[in-house]
Image (cartoon, rainbow, N blue to C red; front, side):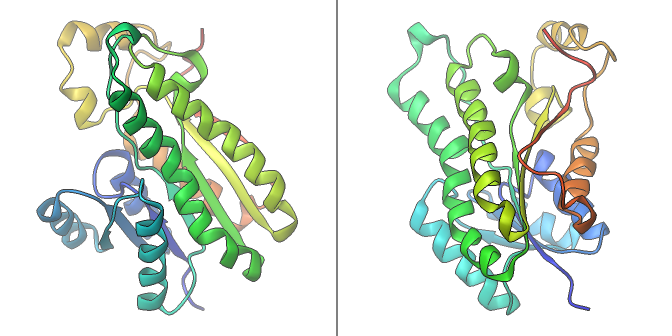
Length: 241
């Protein structure tokens, strides 16, 4: 039986890397998309045993061409798409530039459209697909200095609900995952006092591990999860307003 093919954007570092490893361990053929660091991506590919492809997920044409190349190389369509690529450009609103706003919206939200548009036609033809997008706790709660990021990640949730309705009759599920504060390199660079204040807000008293986010993605990708669609699963240690 041919393995299902999964593609993870922003898949060579952080949560994306953990998702790639978890999907591979679950029996998928896995492709990790990346945009900048070729050496790091090559090292990850060798370590994790996944294929890496370089393109900018915020570029519509590049996504279309990248997906076509992956499908040609693997001689089959993509079964599972994980929209994980994202950036932050944190600033208070009165200091935020138009570039700070636009870059976050185009990558954190726009890439979900670009990639989903590139794969959903074939998923409809095949009457099977899984689209899973990474949102954030800050889409649900808001965060100081993150009007751009919170807006983009909230948009991911609306995008997910609408595409799920469009796709349900074709056996395609579309869901989002909203991680809380997670132990990634980005978080580890925060000042100790800021990090302690973040953890103090979490009832479980710790950060999420990337592998905990990845396990939920694997669950949503499974054929057995075919009646779950249009949902946002929060993984945040009980962190609510």
